[in-house]
Image (tube, rainbow, N blue to C red; front, side, top):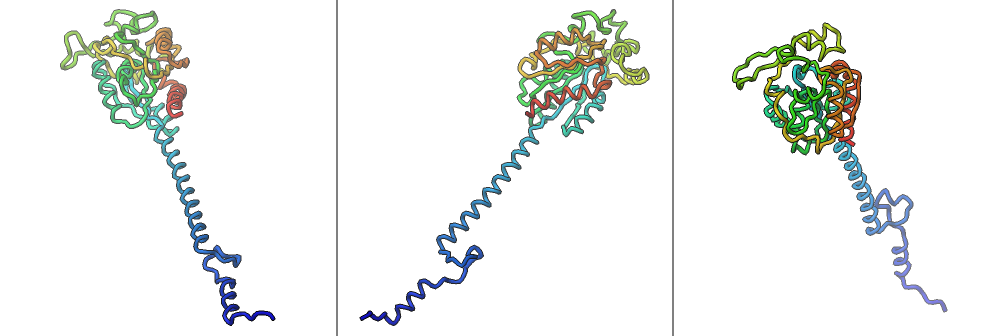
Length: 309
């Protein structure tokens, strides 16, 4: 005889097996979801979302870091020029997204000029490419010493001194410079200035010498304007010995003007090779940043990209 079921047995069985109503959008198949499974799904969804946010954050941080490490380019003018001589180069650097600044070089004394630029460099966060033209090469070689933010030195028709060497001393080390072509009073106009040490004076390059030595690859009218607006340097600054040179510890680049009559290419090449600089030769006179701004900018960008890379 078949045993009879308990009056409530069928009810209890139905209560256990009857699917419950969906409690979330995840239960679209009608399969019951326990609280444990639902919690696991929610946790997984949250974890995936958080991972995506973290990945996006890392990508943004990487882009930000790359942007922040793009170096600032600091351009230092030489004697008988001024910081406006960098204007064409600055425009090109800015077009490429670089911050470029050209603080005026005082041209008063090598130690003082170098300290002025060194103090300016201390105000710049992040990596720096330091560029010097002519006597500005003397200045940057001294100003960059001991500054870990200066990652590259770029010399544009510039002096690259060793310790103890002077600008005029280097310029007279080989023949060819108009600045050493005759007695100083045939090359320079000596002008007194307040507070000058005995025997010191401001040096202005005589017009005929300036046109031959500085502006030989520029239109005559442009050269005449540059001569009229030249920034004089003290005799003491261009005869002062250099201190320890930063190029011994910082990678260097050099643009050599092959028709430079102020610092002949033979002298420039001697200094650049001694400094193990990356050398680019350009058919340009002494003011190559004015006559050949594209070539000058290219060399600076090579140095800057080595820093950013």
